[in-house]
Length: 413
Image (cartoon, rainbow, N blue to C red):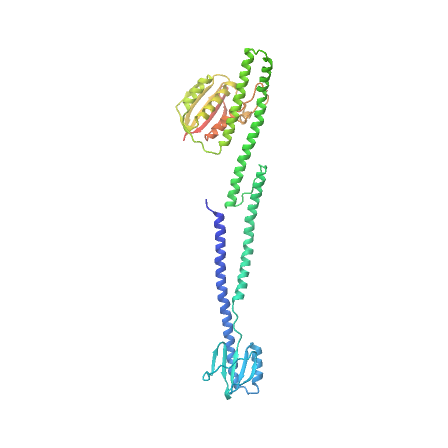
């Protein structure tokens, strides 16, 4: 399984970090270059203005110094030939010792210009601002932008997880028909689909068990009532007929309980693969036909499956044909196009087409049938479950000349 959500989050964060690093580096360089260029231009201009001081008279010098200082924000100091400060604007600048042979130079961002008459002018611009605070502000601004941009995606993800959590809690509290949305194709959507599938299977299983229990309780009432009556009649000295009736009722109850347990086991095992063994279908058919008085025919066919379950499938079909149909009852084994085919035929009245879709429902009773005449109980429902357990199918067809044909198809491989 590809971890789409993992890569989605990981690559998004990685891309954001890469973009942020590139932007920070670019802004730092731009801010530094811009400040340096601006300061360099001011320095050149200041130098040009100071050179013009050579053309000014001593009386005009204080006015020119004030104007230049206010215009450029520079500190300017003028010293006499005797190194005495005679004029200053801004912060006083100390006259360095020595370097008298250099008429104009920069020293610690200070420009020095020697004027006629031995005077010296020192000027200093404010140091160029470092880009740190501005870049920090820009970084915070970008980080805020990234956070705002990532908020919808994060909110959408957490909202989907919250919906999934609420759905799971609701389902766990007993609302078995609760499902969650399956939007997207990432891990959250895959978890939602898995949950919905599991919830549907469990809901169907629980509903099946409830229906099975309700129908079984109803079906057990008749033999239990007959058994109670037989016991009351033969309380003192039961006759042979009463004892036989009691035995028949006990056998009916025993068979019904056995079928209920088998149906429950098949329900619970439906999601697990069947570990089969080679099974001779013709051999099983011959044994069950002999037991019920039916005839068996066909070709030897072997499949991998559960021999006990397949025997039960054939027995239920044969007993159903004997109970609801008329002789002769026949079971035939054949193979066709990769399928093993089991056919059980009778010459009874047949089954109406509208009833065939309901034949394989547990305890289905057609309209007009009383409890005495009975319905189909669990026998055919077990046939469908066993066929499904072997990845096969079962259907009922009308037979030419009258009667019914039950066809079970199972894969050979």
